[in-house]
Image (cartoon, rainbow, N blue to C red; front, side, top):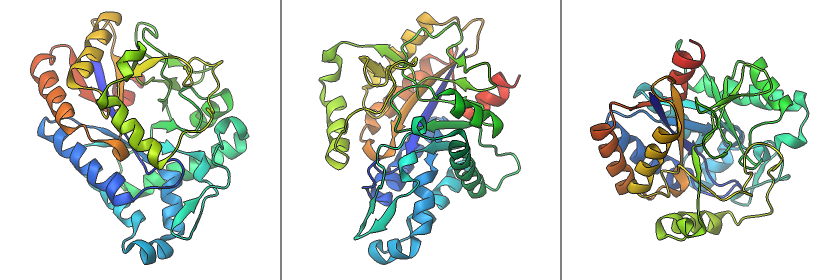
Length: 324
């Protein structure tokens, strides 16, 4: 069976710009409504380094914005969990030492990556963010089991990061964009640890595949708020790190036909009769303007692919497949 995991990066922009209501709360509500209309769960990858800074500067933010970003985020995260969606961890290390002044966040080290951090510092950061997320979902059945790091290119984590994840009980990392096939079960174990890379599903693509309004407009929208800088990825690892030309399974940018094509591709390259294969789709609240295509895609999959595809979450996949 193909296990489709729809993940949503729940965050403002990586340079500290953005409005929580406009770029997180409203689009997350829109995504959830579409998914729930088709009985589909999504996995919210909640950015906790940002959240910790929102809490730290809450008084100043309320004075400037007229609302509390941390309160809005914590309320929505709990609501998403209570409505049957999954909530897992997303981290941008550059927010560790962010400062808020003059109406915006300022990043002291905007290119900070886990590649630049020691095991002790990485573990401390992940533990702090994990504990913060788990405090927002006070449920005896909830566990933080999956992590998506950022500011490191589209690659798997290095050994010291995977080791910190294992020591903290996090089973899945999901960021690499290595094209399929990645083996007959769609994931790989990291460094003989009890940690797995479950990649964002990606396929080789020609340049013209990216030269479409549906892809370019959200990309340009992000670049207006967060202009691209030199890449931080390490291309020696399995992922492309931005250096390879691959098309990610991105619900914010692809047409419904392209999304269905991703599923067809996965069904062709993986042995789903003998394996429980995870296929991870990614989206972002901050650039989600693709409601009609997302809705049409869910309609088609729930109607025509139920024999081969099931919608699941990271929590369910870890508990039912990786822990089985």
